[in-house]
Image (tube, rainbow, N blue to C red; front, side, top):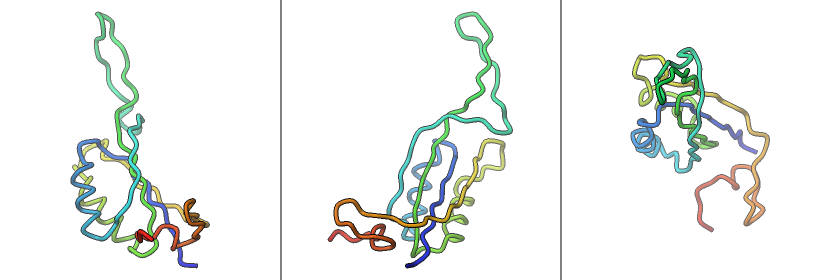
Amino acid sequence: MSKITKIEVMTRPEKLEELKEALNKVEVTGMTVSSVFGCGLSKGHKEVYRGKQVEISLQPKLKVEIVVCEVPVETVVDVIKKVCCTGHIGDGKIFIYNVEDAVKIRTGERGRDAIADNHA
């Protein structure tokens, strides 16, 4: 079975369209996108809400999940870094995981066949 890798990206919401286009150019055809909240080095900021100062510690982010076996992981990582880097705190993180197996529910296919972009 070919190696299957999951790449998870936490990044700025405004980067999504540019990221989708760039990944499509390197033949990444599928992804899952979730709206999430999180904090890292920035630790949030203070705002006034209804006359009271409140600490806003969780920032809106996007979590983009990609699973690849054909496209080289480093190619995907390089694209993500190029698109998502602004040089400022809050650009996000990339996490890379080995995937033991994948199963396509509809057909029962496993491994690379389960994630291949074929419409059979």
